[in-house]
View 1 (cartoon, one colour):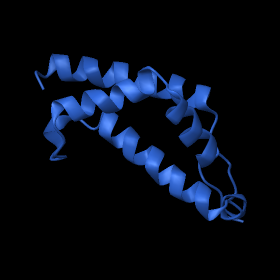
View 2 (cartoon, one colour):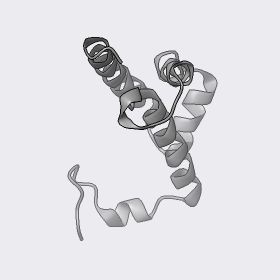
View 3 (tube, helix red, strand yellow):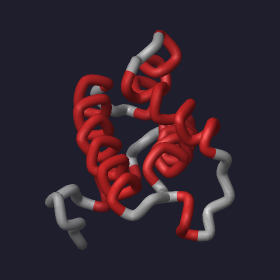
Length: 97
């Protein structure tokens, strides 16, 4: 069976419920809103980007539900996105974005 870089077999991911795939897409959209810089042709107002970042940095009940429904550990997602957001904010500051 083909494997992804994290050694997750494709067959295992195929066992995911359709609902998990849907919530994974919701989570991915929020991730993109939070970390894609404004100068990459991605049209998102600064206030919307900050709102998406706040959703990850200050987890609410909705955050925990979306992560859980997508099949991800909310603490892992929070920690990962906190680091990514910190990095992108520094990049934006350096590049005046």
